[in-house]
Structure formats: structure tokens, C-alpha cells
Length: 144
Image (cartoon, rainbow, N blue to C red):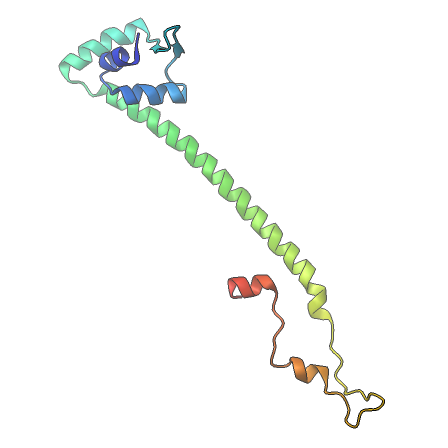
């Protein structure tokens, strides 16, 4: 039957039928005429018609159960993505610290050195760098 007919029998909107087809909870097939046809069991059709006449909310409950299942799958997928990104971020932080550790361990010369032909000794390198603190690009970027 067509999507519209299935929606009427189940007492739901055509959009709810489309979503069920998309999630794979409702079997369907595309016909030669290009329309999508839905397969419903014979038993639920009889019950659905009587429920629609009596104003039952059972079809709505089915739709909500389908939506809850879909949302749970999406939530689990997003949790997995977040966990993966967190692990990658931690690994990158360790790598950055390992790369920058040797540069911080170097010591600058502390004594003034004389150069031939100069009257005064050259200024100490440490004194020139006291005001300028060496920070990596990621520390400047993130304000660490």
C-alpha cells in the first residue's frame, strides 16, 4: 500500500511513515511507477482500524518507541565520537609536551663574553631574556 494509506491505517502522519522507512523499522519497496509502497502485516491492520475508530493511542506509542530507539542509537554514536576525540586530544597534549620539553631544559649562557675589538663586554644573554618568557604557540593560543 502507499505511504498515505499506511499512515491512515496506522493512525499516524505520512512523515512518521517516512521516518520508519528511513530507520528500517517499516519494510517498503519502490514500485515501477516511482512511488514507495509499504508492507504491513495483516493482523496489525485489523487492530489499527479498530484502534483508530476508538481513539486509541497505541499507534502513537509505537511511533514514540521507534523515535526513542533512534535517539538512543544516535546518543551512543555521539558518545563514541566524543570519547574518541577526548583520547586524541590527550594524546596530542602528551606529544606536544614531549616535543617542547627539550627546549625548556636548555640553559642560556649566564656570563658576559668579551669580543676582540670591542671596548665593553657583550651583554649577558640571560639578562636580555629575563623580561621575555618563552611560551609555546599552544600556550599563547589557549592562554596557558
